[in-house]
Length: 218
Image 1: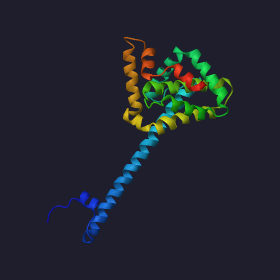
Image 2: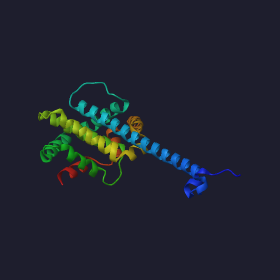
Image 3: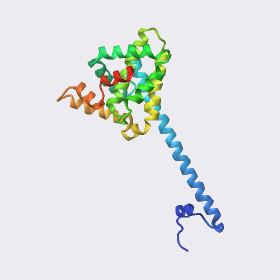
Image 4: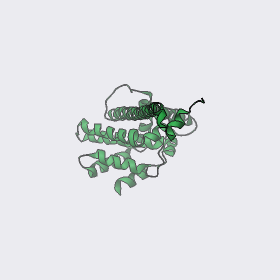
């Protein structure tokens, strides 16, 4: 008797005489699919949690809370996002005030729209990710100056986590997750030996403050 190809047999169906083996085959396939689904959900939750931790740390940092960065990626984000802010501090402040004046009591919903529009061409990259964190950090700082409580900042962090760790999860995975961001950071620092870090960062973003201005005023 020849060797039975179980996968092929399961795909085309067994005869009634082989129903026990058919049942075993289908059971194993169901278990494999279930395990794959569970692994996918775990990856999704893990990426979102990592992104939320990163967003909360940067927002806290911008709000004046002094604490040690919880990860290498958090330290890298503090450095790059602040570099971007410092280059155009006045413009970012102006945009954040305009944004909050027009968004009402829940700026997180408006932030979600801005993030989607910012990568509306589908060309998400680490530079654009940094610009999202930079703008959100400036928003949090402005909210603090207006006396808003920490719950609003928490919702901003969750909005970033839902977008980058949820909607853009596939892109994050393809680009190495937040470990890939750390590699981007180290490459950017190496570029700084020959040219301006700030120039390199905006070139990677593929979008400047003119783009943000367009999104917020239209």
